[in-house]
Length: 91
Image 1 (cartoon, rainbow, N blue to C red):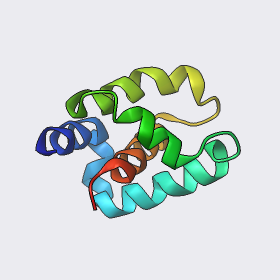
Image 2 (cartoon, rainbow, N blue to C red):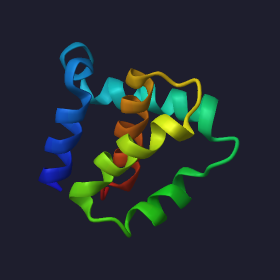
Image 3 (tube, rainbow, N blue to C red):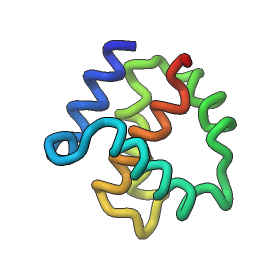
Image 4 (spheres, rainbow, N blue to C red):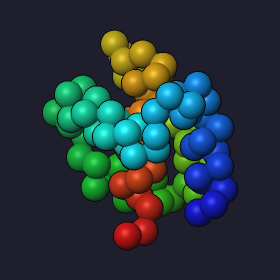
């Protein structure tokens, strides 16, 4: 789990400096609800993501989302990744 947190923090880069992790998750949820939810369920994404090693998830999404999430800028994609990682994290 700690590796995922470090990787997510590294990927959030400049966003992490200006926005807390909770705010990034909230922003990601808003972007997901507006742009992704119409086709994807977060619960299904969480199920599929658990097949990928925990420390590779954020990097895999960061590579995939630019070609998939048309119209979502880099900071929006980073926020969505933060939200998706939070949806998988054990409660």
